[in-house]
Image 1 (cartoon, rainbow, N blue to C red):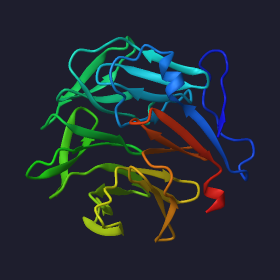
Image 2 (image 1 turned 90 degrees about the vertical axis):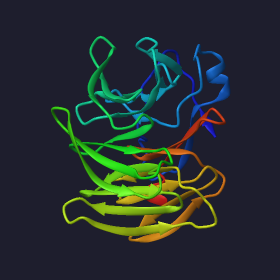
Image 3 (image 1 turned 180 degrees about the vertical axis):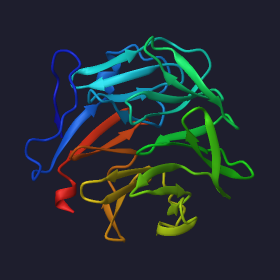
Image 4 (image 1 turned 135 degrees about the vertical axis):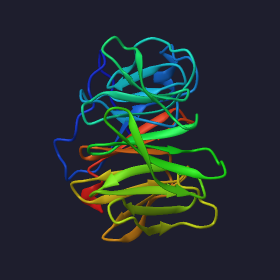
Length: 266
């Protein structure tokens, strides 16, 4: 594993040699020991326009880059449940039961009040999507429009654990399955199923190579040309694809690595 440390917080950049597969260590327990993070990091991550990785605890945001991790803004009352970065580059978060955005003063400004408290949020190419994560009686999936209006797209009998947008369709996970939903035609299709109680916790999409990655706590898989393959049974966690690398974040181990050039090897 290659671990690089430089002075200051430098952006995460793509590889200059896209055909070369390598590991980059982005976060370790040693890095966290030198920070003043209060609380446990959430099971969430995104990449800012300045190529820093956005992380959060329940009360504060952080930026991770080469050299360390720094707080973004102040400490918030209540609880941050989930976050994403929209196409305009704004941080959008679910704070308590409100959908908010991080304004220019680093305050969470309310967009709308959501139906439930513990919900997830993900930014698509043009819209925001929110969904129930708790195992309540019925788990709903909503699309949010500009102006604070939202409508329900569909209902799932089990919680949605991860969502990404792929060529106009919504690819999402429930339990051990990966499904796709066409919001125009209302068509639902199965893409993958692990079985054996292997709960899928995260999704990531490589648009350039049209590869969908998904993961459990212990393993990573991918879908290419409608076929399912196992990538690794040594790494697991929460995923984000950035430029030419797959980021793998394990909050339990306080670790994060990036597999650079992985799509060219598949």
